[in-house]
Image (cartoon, rainbow, N blue to C red):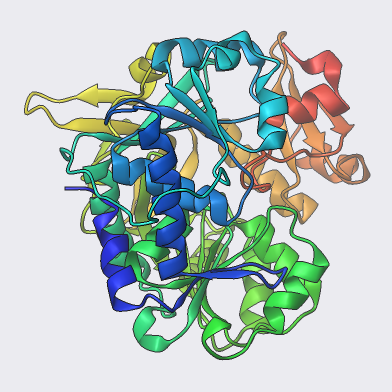
Length: 475
């Protein structure tokens, strides 16, 4: 099997259908994308690479990126992705472990790669533009389901790089599960497109023969305007995004009336943000999605009910996560959530400290992943978020109560090295009198700008916020 077979089927069925459209007006059909991938594949095969030899890839978001990923997976070359902003010594540790045989990149990537002796040591450096030689006919290498498809390295919670391995079998199964549980209204039979904010969802769309409206990571006003002006088959019917993008979409002021299925996940979402979205797009179905990089999705729920139930419980955030998807198995161990299933990534490549924290194998040989979250299950079988495993239950509850006093969630509790409890965040000093009256255990209150994570731009990066706004509390 090879997960690229899904794309080949889509190409055969709809070669002239738009595969990817970008806000600058450029687009590429399924047939053209497959041909471009075939040319990249021909370039790599001339280098003498054999299936199983990894290739490091660093390309900007666009047609060349997807054509290259398709070419690599079709050939059985594992795709190696790293965060470019990761400290150099960690990147070099990854490269020494994986030992990629080629570096597929652009001129900008070449400059980035020159700073590392480990990257310079990669035998072959290739640009996907190349000379375009080759028939452009994409050849599919038959591989085992366990064969590595995509290796994504990020910084783990311990600071060590951890590699999430997506095998061909995993990618195939996850595609099936996403289709079954997210119910994208903008599917091929509806003649609509899917608006992609998470770049990996484009691969799922390609496998389904669905047009992708690809949003650049800058989220510029001109990009929103261009998407709002789309009509016909290019007008997006569905969208999967995080709360930060949903907020930016509402702020843009443009009318996205074509959207009728919106899936929101990746980070906790304020109830008020959902409520604003319900008002702006009253005809759209909103799905609240819970999952992680290693297991997506885990639970889903109609967002309107999730918000109503979270509000009724006194929360400003949508903590009602929903019902587990049928394909997932759960084990709640002391309120810590472990999950297993065909779309749950097994052990990390490298990052043994992360493996000890987040992975286990049971007596039947089944792999389990620790979500790193505490959850509770109610009488209806729904999951409720109860904080990260590293935060005490008491501090999580206190934090939620403080949010209600503040009227916003741009703040967090921090316990310093002496055990004293601080409230750090935006406009918290203004509410100091009310907070001290109700919560005397909070000893210090400090205004500081809240910084968000790189990927979703929604989760509070507590460490970075402290370093920026209250560096004396770090450590």
